[in-house]
Length: 328
Image (cartoon, rainbow, N blue to C red; front, side, top):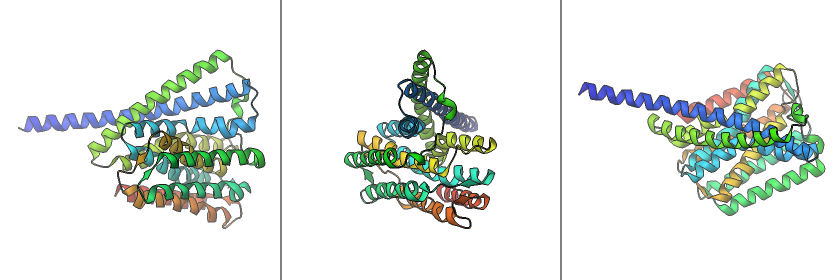
């Protein structure tokens, strides 16, 4: 009897470790695939003589959101809507609480005027629109997804026409033209890596949730969301260490806008997304709104249009509190 029990424990532990490896492997493929796709997309745009401003706001934004988009579509299609929703909501919280928090602790950031004239108001409108759509009936309908995509399109048109100076070039090192064969190869490899990574990540996350006895939403807003925010965190730390201003509050807020309007908008346009775990409606979305709002007073106090290490500690503490209450 003891032998059978020990065998069961061994099998359970082995499966759990395998699931962790699936998650790590999936995230690795997503990050590498997203990076290849980004390089190929920028190279292709340069080859087609598309203006840099257009590349920055369309090609680059979509490419950097590709991991979240692929994971969310795959999760929703596979009948795991809480992974799709948790991934995006958790990523938005992680971008501001974790990524921005760590970045400003390492080095202060000067915030541009476009933060309070464009970026922050649009992020709040997009967040409130998403909450209004999902809070009352617990699902994102296809027509609501289409409304979100239209709102994103109008926002991009506005930026390109009136706010060109607000767009920061995130990938200046990719301005060198690339041979066509290399561009096509990176596009193909990037696409395959994203697909393979999403398969591994979702399978591992679902199994991990089952073995740990937690819901898919909890795994989505913690493990998966932090994983898909790793590229932003890595880029932020590298930029600070190199003393470059490549990373800005505007870039992270732009990522949050894209996560909501593009990732969830496109995903729900393909298939409606229904909330399975009410924790998303009673806890996560309010944390997302709260931490999004918190950035505004931090930017203005105590020094106007500047974020320093004290602000970083507040953001990091807020993110830590969110994770604690989510896992508790």
